[in-house]
Length: 354
Length: 163
Image 1 (cartoon, each protein chain N blue to C red):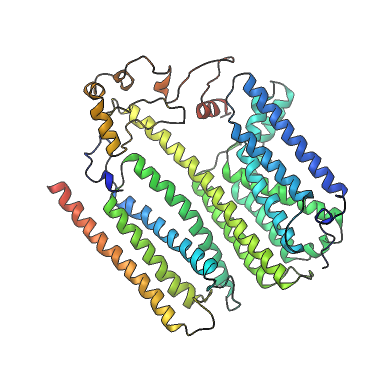
Image 2: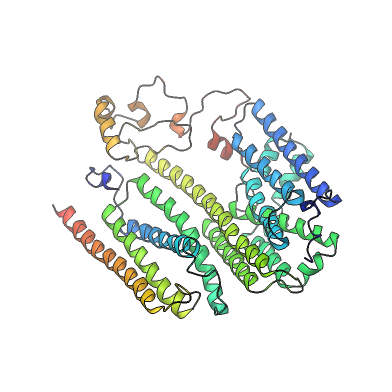
């Protein structure tokens, strides 16, 4: 049990100074996010609540990984810690779009300008190139587990803290680069981001399997602990990679839907009763063929069908009850603040730089 | 799936048989990979996570394939949803593609993974011959089902526009 002292918090002892700093930092960041989101909502912007929940969960994950009780033997506990710190928490934090929030909530001035120019600077642009970010993330893991770093880390608290900070930072960078939800210098296409995710996932899986066969050099571990830890790494990595895949695929699906709706509107009058629904849940699909229910609702409302081809699509429906601006694909309903779109998706893209 | 077979074509939406087949083939392969992982690795515990006869190349290809399956399942689902949304799904071709995917993955797993790369075997401590035969014949049956469905779908497609 050479690693027994790695996680002081896992036992009965009080958390060490590094753990306390991490917990306080996580708490502060979560409070800052909540305050900023609240300010945005008070002035009338839409900022979905689930983003706040996601960010809070991510911060809580960081705090827990730093100081909470972790299951299993020392290596398994270490692996759970790294999964949370390097994969799950970064995903939850990045999904909450902290940079977009900061840019929206900061008043015009040097701070906002500085943040924006940092986000768009050339070095940051290179860092968030997906393959570079993946290399920093997974390459760091290979260094950690396939060199003496892992063994050395057990005896040096400072090195231990540095490794953990690197794992979190590299995880954040990789997730940020692959998901690309926040504004960056240059947007990368789906093929590059998808391929990077595939390569990084494969490297992660291979590393997990080699760990199953042989422990990190210099570390003394029981076989059972090693095997559980390696499988936690393999399957836990799968879960987060699948979630990342869902993020990429969902953003493609939304973009394709928007493009399709746009093409239909350009093509002129559309058929069907669901021409413009103005549903607030993102882009509506004008004449989405929903099978029998579409046909039956068309039969039930013949007046809408009769008017097909008569001028613009939106005119095929009675003007009453149609939200203003719904011809744009999203409703511009109530304005509480100064001139801000109150639609979730539309507002996001409208306010995003570039 | 079948609800949209006899729907009159909506303007601007054409069924896309080839795309339907490819997308559902991807889903089929990924589903079979998931079944393999869940049933044989986790529930039955027949396959081993790692047996030490694996080569470096085998390990690399296994990692790539495993991640690709995972992402293919996700991507396939969203591509399928997109086909449905556009009314471009050709159900007959989709089913054919699905079975082709199932069978192709099972055969690939049985021949390349188990025998050529020797990643792991179907089961340990028993005579493998019947297991290997059952596994690969099962894959072949699924594949042939897909071929038959594909031929029927192509015939339907040719007969459809003519009539």
